[in-house]
Amino acid sequence: MEVILLERIDRLGQMGDVVSVKAGFARNYLFPQKKALRSNKESKAFFESQRAELEATNAKRRGEAEVVAKKMDGIKLIIVRQAGEGGQLYGSVTARDVADALKAQSITTEGLTVLLNAPVKNLGTFKTAVRLHADVKVDVEFTVARSMEEAHMNLAKAAELLERAEDAAQLTAAEEAPADEAAGEAEAAEANA
Image 1: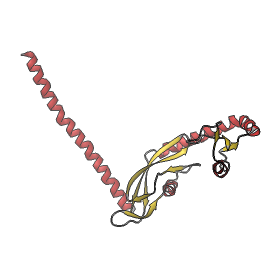
Image 2: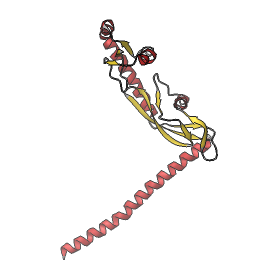
Image 3: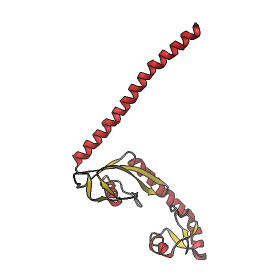
Image 4: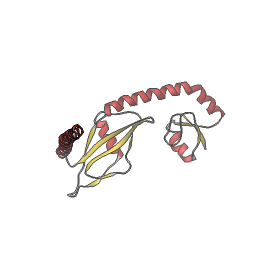
């Protein structure tokens, strides 16, 4: 079945493209979500008459999504779940759970899609992409813990390890600098001799 896309859709096409899709996909997703029209003369004429309005609406939504993306930059979510001794969750954390955690942080937008490849089944810190618009994606970090206190302790340990790594890098650079100066002085002495 050929359809005219009313907005950009990943792995399918841009706004205005005529693409061939399976009838079920068009009937169950594209048409109800108002993302496409059947490809025929009337639909093409309708699309061309509404093109400027559709592009303006798309640009407005992209702008709103970019504002939300700036608000989400650097956000760290905490999701509390019960787990066994080895850190195995009783159940799992899904894309819906991440979306609910974002809503709890008062981040809501139309068309928000969490791109979590597989459900999370262990305690720990994870990253996933969140699509706010077809052209706007943000990486979100979330921690799955048994309690809020445990999550805060894990974040503090991670920050402490990062500080130690930076201190080690600075110490290594400081140790290398005198060795470089001594080698430079030795070369200068040989050149003068």
